[in-house]
Picture 1 (cartoon, helix red, strand yellow):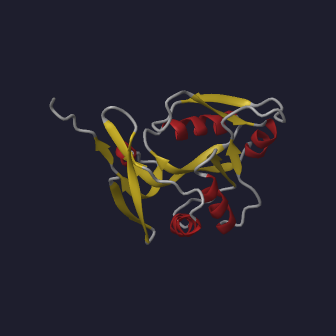
Picture 2: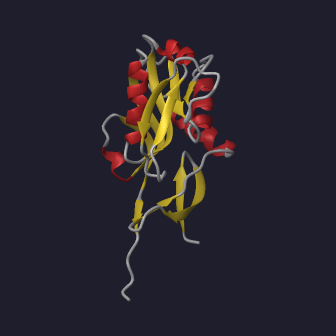
Length: 184
């Protein structure tokens, strides 16, 4: 298997290159379960963030980073936008989103109780990788619907054209890999 070697926040990882379409492959970056990487990247990002009241991330791969950043910021809580409506949710806020790493349209869902925690708060959006920006834009819309003010967007990596997003705070760029067609 082909890999892409990346050093981020002083931590080296060898990322498998995985095709996601007929023309494009990505270096698969997964923070879930990687304590060393999560702690190092959170430490590298925390002082670059503006003053914030609450962090918001989408389920699932940004959760460990949001947890570690929240701890470093001495926040009591952070909020996770779920990907499905759960039976315990009352009056959920729901948005549809399509991401580069998913084949189908997904949902982002905030329970009303979480939405209340966002009203009139300064919010930093947290993700592991931003690619097209669709997911983080949907997360921003969800937060704004709840009455929160997004003061920053942060991720460990900016993939592809995301590196050109002026409002994204990130540590490293992650290239996309074109798949070349072999002549028949």
